[in-house]
Image (tube, rainbow, N blue to C red):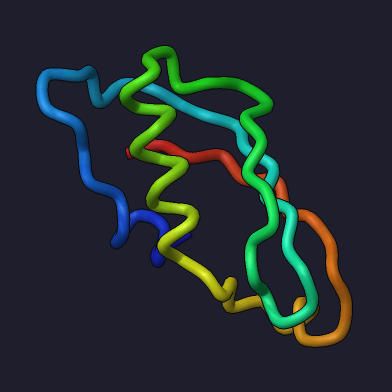
Length: 78
């Protein structure tokens, strides 16, 4: 989560009071293959900014990603 927050660029003039639930699918090695919002952030600009931050985070630093593909569910808040 720290790397995603580091890559997140907050859109101007949007509320910082939000929570998104996201599923990230990844291939062996941690490369992201898909980002799915299970619960949006409440604003299309926020959804887009969080999606871009996730894609910038690859490869995901997961030990289990070195051995197999999979998915990860996260909650993102500012």
